[in-house]
Length: 270
Image 1 (cartoon, rainbow, N blue to C red):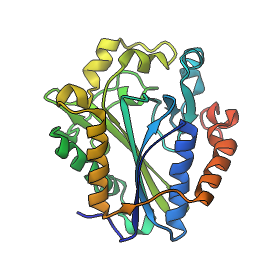
Image 2 (cartoon, one colour):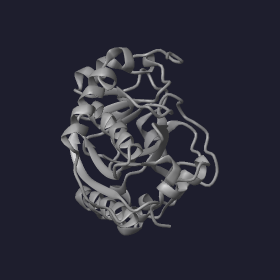
Image 3 (spheres, rainbow, N blue to C red):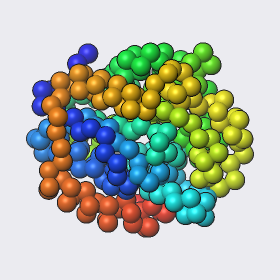
């Protein structure tokens, strides 16, 4: 199924800090809600970044490790656990579209917006699929070690290891879906961002797989496959951020995504 609507732009991979990437996701949603183009984009975390789920307890983070290793920490507007986004091993995407253009039922919306993600895996020769049955969690604070859910967790390989995760939220009459595709796994560094996780690097690698383990493809190949699949699905023209969008994103970074009160907020805080 093709993307809903007919006014889409593709913004190709940009290297930016995590707080600014999260702000740009929100700005893309505002643009779509205000009658501007819907957006498909890929992006890269520079520096590497730990994103906390909306309601995650900050005490689950090893702040000293992140500071010592130069890892940014921000908080998403989507739920779930923390995700370490490696500057090399993680390939991120987001889709921002008016809410009235997509199904109102969450799982149907997920499946529609994940179509180009599976299209990218097909181009790479990776046999990816939604996990068929729930898989028990290993460590709740870490998103990739929570139970796997058929609605939004993508697995690959004969062992069915997680290769991609996706999340959605609705904002200003728009839907934003963002997700991470694992190109290469760095289990030690991922686990190091959490405070005393009871999971070994070996157990992490048993749960998570990267594209580089499954096919002979470079990171550039994987990004090109994702961008091509997103562009074809949405029939999107090459686009870029406006000056006004970038200014708005910087405001949101200061107000929220780089603000300690937001990032280190307690669970259930408003």
